Image (tube, rainbow, N blue to C red; front, side, top):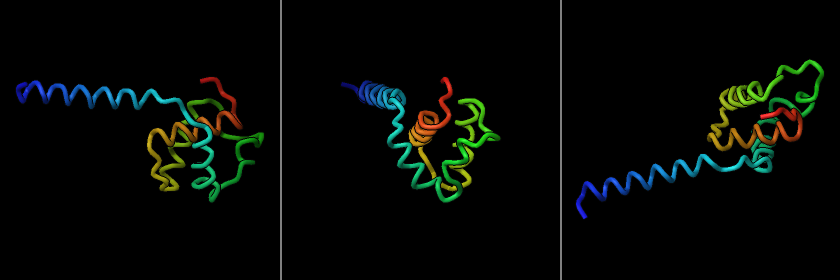
Length: 97
């Protein structure tokens, strides 16, 4: 096997691995753990159920979680962000995706 062929197979393998990683299902249980550890310092769960809440769509929720991640310097991975959004949506917001 030539070096070019080997490099090609290595590249294909790594690209397939990252593609599979993005297809994981969101984990609301993990999202709740992350939320309780990183988000409860700034607010409690009443913020999600108040009548004048600022989140009105699933997209708003995703954007707000990303904003709060940066503001809290939580450094969530993209999977972590997805998990926190899944938890909040499942338990509080109930938006269609």
